[in-house]
Image 1 (cartoon, rainbow, N blue to C red):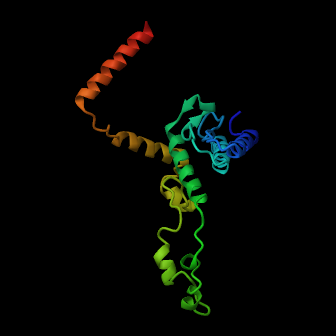
Image 2: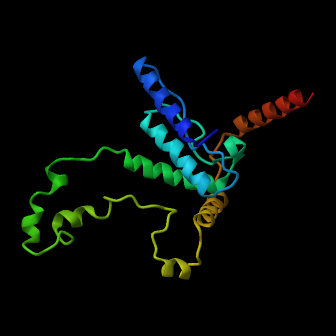
Amino acid sequence: MFGTPESAMGLLCTGQIARHFGLPFRGGGGLNAAQTVDAQAGYQTLMTMHATFLAGTNFVMHTAGWLEGGLVACYEKFVMDVELLQMMQTEFTPIEIDEASLAFGSHEEAGHGGHFLGTMHTMERFRDCFYRPFLSSADNFDRWSRNGSKTTDVRASEIAHKMLDEYEAPAMDAAIKEELDEWVAKRKKELMA
């Protein structure tokens, strides 16, 4: 079953075995057994994805959009999983520890009884020192209500539809496209025979 503690433990163990033998490891992803985009889909995906990162997986398939053990691909879940992946990438980025990041001199600039929010160190870093979600909401209930009370799956659906509406196929040489179309038609005919 996908998204269980045992599947996460399996990923961790397999990752250790692969490292022991110096082998690349393929596994994990946003695996879950949920039938729809709900809390189960979220926590099972998180369990599997977190184990995937911790296992040091070299190649990950089925990373985003999975539902029902891989029987369903869901646009909303894909968008939600992309944000989860961005958050996890941020979580697993090594913390910079040096004189500039520790800002030992900032206490002098803040002064006795002051605060660090207005120091030069804070002003130089506050815009990009935190992960900024494109999907999740940190609004309080009142603001969230005034903005339409949109749940995560609704916001994800809006983003997915916008992406699909704005999609532009990459440029392709007309001769190559014609050749591909002919090949696809030929293969369809062969497979249907």
